[in-house]
Amino acid sequence: MNAIIEIDNISKQYEGGTKALDGVSLSIDQGEIIALLGPNGAGKTTLISIICGLVTPTGGTVRVGGHDIRKDWRAARRLIGLVPQEIALEPFEKVMNCVRFTRGLYGMPPDDAYIERILRALALWDKRDAATRELSGGMKRRVLIAKALAHQPKVLFLDEPTAGVDVALRREMWQVVGELRREGVTIILTTHYLEEAEEMADRVGVINKGNLLLVRPTAELMGEFGAKTLTIELDSPLDAVPASLADRGLTLTDGGRRLDYEYDAKADRTGIARLLGDLAAEGVSVRDVSTRQSNLEEVFMSLVDGNKEGAA
Amino acid sequence: MTGINWRGVWAIFHHEMTRFFRTIMQSLLSPVISTTLYFVVFGAAIGGRIESVEGVPYGAFIVPGLMMLTILQQSISNASFGIYFPKFSGTIYEYLVSPVGWLEVTMGFVGAAAAKAMLIAFVILLTSFYFVGANILHPFWMLAFLFLTAIGFSLLGFIIGLWAKNFEQLQIIPLMVVTPLVFLGGAFYSADMLPPFWEGVAKLNPVLYLISGFRWSFFGLADVPVGVSLFAVALMVVICMAVIRWIFATGWRLRE
Image (tube, rainbow over all chains, first blue to last red):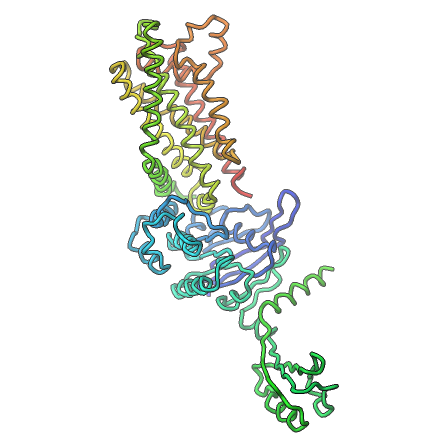
């Protein structure tokens, strides 16, 4: 795979002295979806803003499609579409004209057939003649996506695409992103919804305090940190884990009412069947069982906490 | 760096003109009404007693001044509002992330602001024909002055819009600086009609040179040499362009 974005040692220090980014390097392949994850103020938006040209970096270089974003900015910017975090639209402009305008701004010849296609894909075609101020929040966000796609970019930046939108709309956004991926668009999204990164991204990059802590394929990250826990609720509380099961790594919680068993879901033998059999043999009566996989949130928190300890 | 993104310039120009035509009635009607009032008050009521200035009937004498007044006000307000509005609504990001540089953005916004101002000036000229009849000695130079002034003051308005952080700042320069300069720039009188001391003071006012040159193109009468007038307005264009280039290069009030 070819890298479409090469970020090399980018840093940004604001005039007040705040260091928003501290030497971030990252290579993004063509056609992949990468999620940048981090708490508010971690530097995600600053990184995106630098690549798109909204913020001037204090150090480092970025190349988009081989074009340096500062020396060869016109060529670099033609490849990029940006969906900003804040909804910003001309209130009195019609949807269709908004999208046409952006296409023109990027120096592309008019192509209403193409614009129709993206408006239809984003379920906005019926609203093409509506002024943007008449639209709902979700529709406005989709207009921003349509604008960002108006010049057929190779790379799309989505800065917190689902911040403040309801669950149904979030699903809808994910669908849109899925369709774009099928068309081969490289997508970089920032989010603090871990579910979103887990759902959509091929790779996850974790940013905290201006540092890129890690970048890993989502599945690998989940596999590595994603141990599963089997929770067994007992009919009557136990004083201690039965001696015969002492070597199974069980923890007794909830005043002896619950047994937690951690296991590797991908292993050939999870040991669950044997454990349940042995519990029955011990005369322990089970009321209910459930399993739970640690999600990115926990993975993320452990990384960020680790980072704090490392820094201390 | 490749050449100029002309499609980008056109997109901005077209977008700005569309906004103007969306409110065409108020855009054109209000200057026509205010000009008519000026003609009634200055041309008919007061002009009836003044009769003529240097051989030109007073009603006709004030036409170039009124057109300049409108060009200056319209150019500044169109261009300053044009660029301030995207800053206010947040859509300015699009201009900063797309492949358009300072020159394309300036040509788009300033071109549209100047075009609107000139359109309104022509409507005023037509209105004045109704009151005082047509009389233009040097039509080419009239157009040249009109064009350069519209560009010059649209550039100034563009800078004001880039500088302004709120609507109050947007209004303050046109209100506090430009309108007084126009009224003291000989829109309604010739500088020779002032006492010698005030005539000297008036010559420090750059707007006097514009109105003087413009009036010359109508009647062949000027307070100052025409070459000086042309030079003054050309200088203004150059200075404003340099300032805008600096703003975009440094990202002042645009980028972090």
